[in-house]
Image (tube, rainbow, N blue to C red):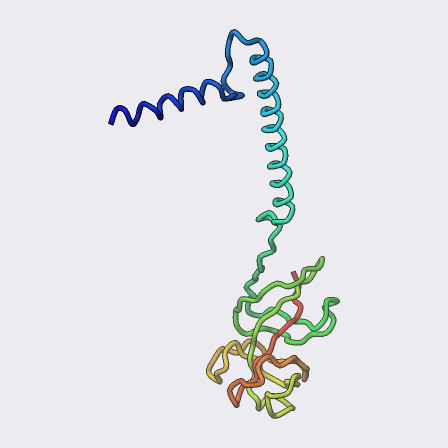
Amino acid sequence: MVLLLFPFSLITYFLGKNSVNPNVVNPNDQNSITENSSNNLNSSSFTTESNQNLSDNQNISNSLTPNKSEINEPKFIEIEVNTMIYKDKELSQVLIESTQTKVKAQIIEEGDNWLKIMRTVYAHKSTSTTQNCTDKEIILTQNIRIEPDKNAQLFGTLKQPSQFKNLDSNSQLEWCKFQFEVYIKK
């Protein structure tokens, strides 16, 4: 067995001695030291370039990914009882003179003295002049509720008949579901 390993160790010895390894420095060979120093400089500059490329790539990926502070999450507001609801941002056309229950609504736009809010609400078909809730737009004449139930709290009573976009044409037979986008004072 020793005889079998002996030829391999001789081959390894001779190949290793004659092969050039740029990282091995022979202290007696001045050319080897110079070559190795320049190799080290090149590899050092390569590392710096690689780090710069990584930095550039991080900057690119950072510019493509918004910061957490830039992501707009929905804002909500609690609409208090007795809040006046308007049709317009000038706050001149009153839609509901006084809300009758406290509800949460999403803020979708903000002005100097007003907020545009959005809330899903319901109206019984008996309060609609369209008499069915399969139309894309409905005209309501009276009560708006938070839930599709006659016993549910009343959100408010319309001051005059108003037109709204219907959200669900397959809603329960007696109820119209619609998106309420209106204005309130700040």
